[in-house]
Image (tube, rainbow, N blue to C red; front, side):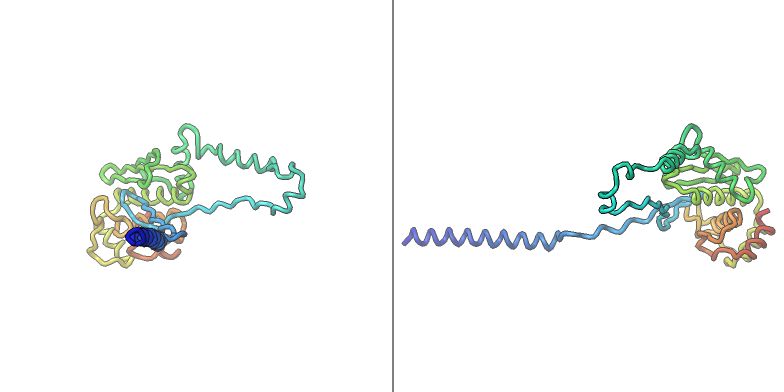
Length: 251
């Protein structure tokens, strides 16, 4: 009788262990289901004019060469799948671009961006194109009217972004040289920004949410003959407004 009860007890224990194991697996499946969606990508932090700003990532679209269907590949000779001479040459030219590699490529790439703008640096402004520093894209020193642009690689910083950075920093430099308190007050009125708004929010603070940042962005819009602006204080200027602002404040 004892032996029978002992075996029953052992059997009950084994069954209980199997039940607990099954429950544990079910709980694990609930806690860690397959196919968990990836976390949303963090926003890219972009710095212009030494002011840290959160903005959506800028993505350069790359068009890949279409691939032939599998059934088509099977019916073609192997030689037909070899890249053409033209494709190979274009690839070599892209990799060997003097603006993207070689000694002094940052200087050459920066100068190319500068040359694409409406005007160059104002008299009295010095500009240097230096090695990239990640999120920090450029700095302007108001006391010495000096601009430093940190040039990223061609794969990490698009030509359009670099051009925007250079134009933005030139706006700060122009501000440091030519904008007086009276002109700044007139500029606020022209842009519909409340009178008395502090021109500089603070040192190394958000740029696009300050009048100084709006000035640099609108100046950059004028320099690029563009329709976009990253200012958070006012909408991008219309073509007519850009012409008026350019005549009154930028030249």
